[in-house]
Image (cartoon, rainbow, N blue to C red):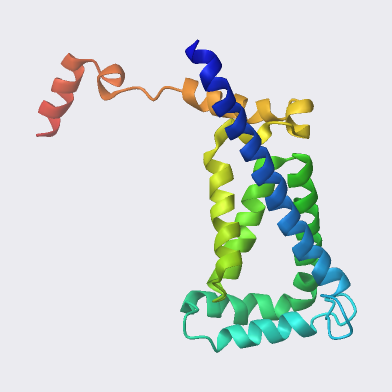
Length: 196
């Protein structure tokens, strides 16, 4: 009887994780699409029609913000600004791809980690708002939900979710020998006596 009462709660949690994964994917998909197509209207800007303009301005403005760490300012000056054209095309395309992957549940864990990496860069650039915090906590929420991220996913359908299990189980099977196993007690005593 207790099992029947727990099932609706479990199903609610499972469905909530799936919904969260899909909404997280839609957020990243829209972020990429708006960069590619422009943010609507005649005043909207597209990263593809004016390549490098918006991103260069964004990075230069970031250098002037007091809440941006010095190491990140160094990264912007030495790497990002020098590769602004490559980043201009890479960022929106990656956002669209991981958004679609998350919605479909394909390569779910690598997609979440990619989103988390991009989002950490966004936060380091000094942009902290409600939307960014929501996306950031959603990424961690999905990571903490464990295997539930694979429910109703292509990963589950193609059995890709088991690949992670195999690598985790292999690492658990590897036992590091203890000092006593490596050196029996008598030999260990002799070794210390010789040294001291």
